[in-house]
Image 1: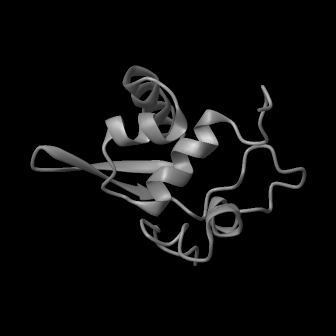
Image 2: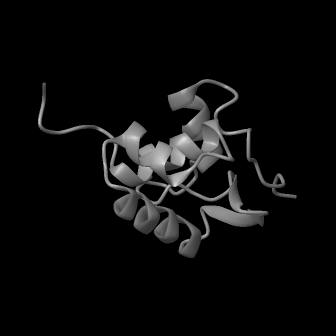
Image 3: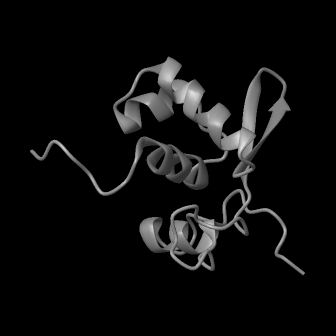
Length: 103
């Protein structure tokens, strides 16, 4: 098994959230192979950067991916997060918690 990967933990967490906007931190952690504390930190980073919006629903959080946001490392900054998520996770991955389309 390689000791490196193409996607960062931040990208993997974002993909988990795109697939299931109601995913719990413990499930994100298990899926990515990190601790719950690390998952919490990454979710907080993504929210602070504007890539996801956390919405409280009772005792659970729901997340909305801001799919129109640019991919930070794209060379020309014209690739949207939603486009990348659709490529990585299938057509519906970036749409489950999609925000409004840019106007």
